[in-house]
Length: 292
Image 1: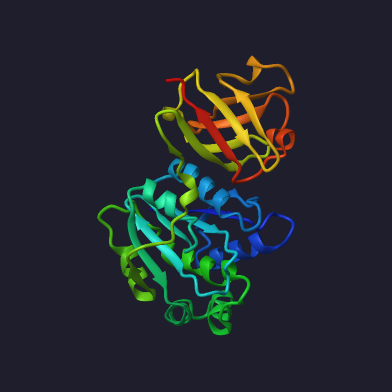
Image 2: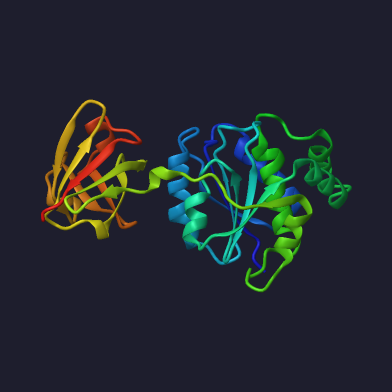
């Protein structure tokens, strides 16, 4: 049975936050295997979080649980969600970060955690477990739901038997119904979709990787080799050029546009950082003028 959990956050690695979350999960079940996708999402950057989860979740075995904690609304009235799709369970705040990944996996049943019921269930289920009992009795901190709610929810869902292979198994649904209620929708994140006409496509920078590459939401299928690609920042509009296939097709330090490994239009600098070169950031516009 699968006991695999992926973990994505904006916690970084300098502070003890990631370790505390993992400690609580392992207190629920020490056999749960945790794979870190990244903990270096820019603080509160929902667009980056949505992008990372969307483009990572499908590389994990069926039955994995995907936990994403990028939660600038922590302590507010936003819901804590667990969504069961055909292959996975996604856990995170209802702030848009789960929306695109869930949709890409075919949609699923959405559950909103009922905190008081959940804490009562934890106290009963993990009686004698020092870590979980303390969380259940003290209640969640208003600033660290990652440790006090998301982590025990992930451990509770995986449980002592694992999440199985998903199809044909109602165990996860039964567990969720004990501590959560169904809802019909989740908060979307609209920035993930470009717009266009026959003559142009307009997109956004939706992710910037550690190399400074500006990754857009414009898919390869919307482009042709002759199209002209522009980047618009707060300070300027720059013609980057037409598509190139390789970084080495331009000189060192020269910007270029190419299709990256995720099938999306990227703006890069050979041997450098497009982010620094253009003084670019999240949400900057990318314009493609079509050759028609």
